[in-house]
Length: 98
Image (cartoon, rainbow, N blue to C red; front, side, top):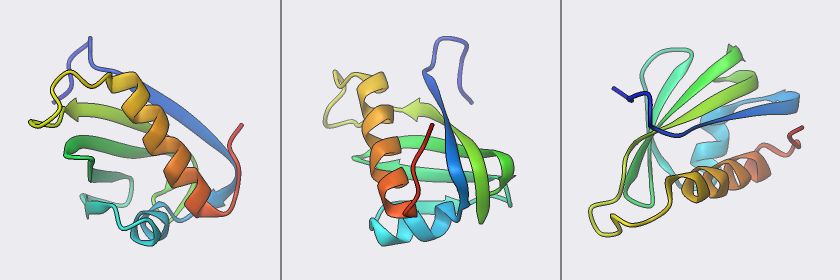
């Protein structure tokens, strides 16, 4: 669904974390696709979170792909949105990223 030009950010955690628990703790809407992929609605943008090391319930690393921007804020910078999302998600995991 993403093109070559769509932003993707990678995050490696110090300890494995349950990404779904972190999303629930931050009240971010999501739909688990399978044990590795989760579709997220964050600030009306659509993101795909993919556990790249481990599964979503115990991820050591993950990628976040920008799929579609908010219809109410079409000029928002995708890279800053991904960075803000990752910071918020990692803070809820009670671990840190490298």
